[in-house]
Image (cartoon, rainbow, N blue to C red; front, side):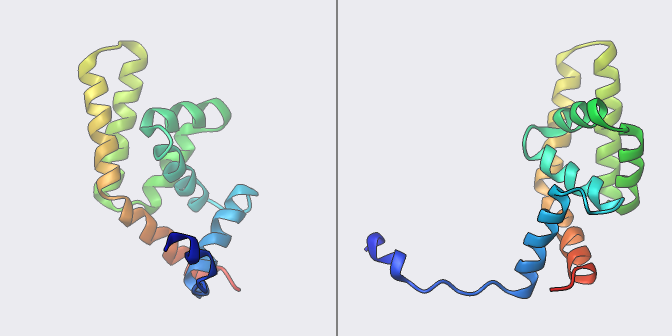
Length: 133
């Protein structure tokens, strides 16, 4: 039965899906402005290794403090507070390494994953309002 699924007609993409895909294409070409570029980077990095990866990668190739400021502009309060908590722990862990800090950072990662749909909604709203197809 699975073999014949290749002949099944695919549903066309909705305008919303097209805008979503185009948004990520523009981001990959660095053509999305602040603060949404920071939000897309945040979403991408968190899903590829958590807050620690986001903080390391942005600090190595950009202005992490500016990225945090930009994110606070668009994130809902709980997500913004979670980001700040993770950032504070990240700064402490640079000075001292301990398991408790790692656990807190993991909790922040999990909070993000549990609420990622809110980030997706912010980005989808931006795409719907700003991308013409």
